[in-house]
Image (tube, rainbow, N blue to C red; front, top):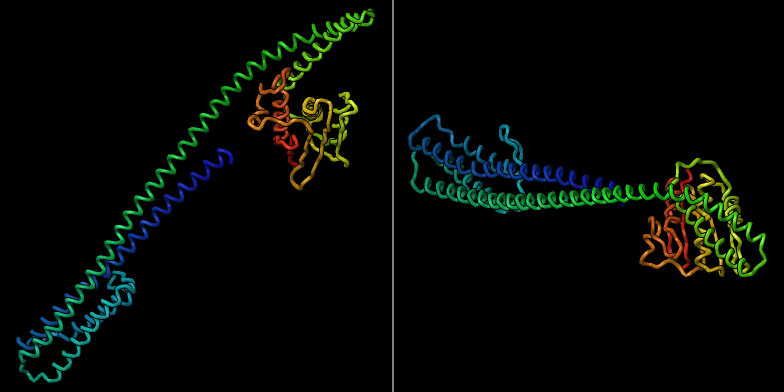
Length: 412
């Protein structure tokens, strides 16, 4: 996963956490508020019961014709039922009572039923004279109703406290999660900037080395060309075996230097590819024809022709480097096989050899500049291969058993 994707996912996660935090807290606060309304309604039972008793006493003892105990009793029943079923008390929304409070509510409603029954008996037998026992019985049941309402209020209040504690705990967890995600985001950004800084610093150094190498390589080519011509001229004019051997050693040295110069030049002068459709087998044949293979080396090319969109000259450099490495790895004894697979969205080219393989500890670094396992290598050949493939919007990787270089190119 690339750094940009990581940052995007973490930012999305953090935004989701923040939105989720606000929504969760808002929902819990709304829930607490609604349960709080239920507490108010449950508490109102006590007030209405007291008002009922006062109205009844005004009607019976004071003979107040305006006293209406029955109205208060009906209001009390409506209030009890509102607490259970939910609804609106003026503009105050009351949610349906939670099942866990239904036992306490049933007790309240039972005491209300007894109170109402006693009141109805009282009104049926009322003849203007109030007995102390009748009024005492009504007051007792009213007290039971008030007590059971207090129990219900206390039970709902405990529920509110528990929800509030859960909300505080949840807020702490969400806060810690947000802080954690933010710290991870900062660490990733810090690492990205650190990596980019190191990469830029390394690129600057490579650019300086590349420029210097390019100048040196350019300045060395003319003298090497002169030495080559002089060596060939001397070889044509002498038959002394010892002299011929020494001239052959000089030629090998010139070839080694020329190879290293070519590696340097291929690395420093990589440019935007000129893309055209080319036959892969034609490119491979041109590359293999530049080598002299002994009979002990077997070369296997793709059976079918495949058209690929590429810069031909750059791909020749790519395959020449890979073929040269394969030859060195098999030490002129083994096989080199190139296969191709075309998928709907990509073309996969594999270069395999039967050599000793790449050290596992260093297989991830072989495409970095100046990394080489050869005594006479420059460490720029595979780096050039990577540059070429990436300039074609592709990827190149390596694996062992057998040693395989995998080139993946997009088809569009």
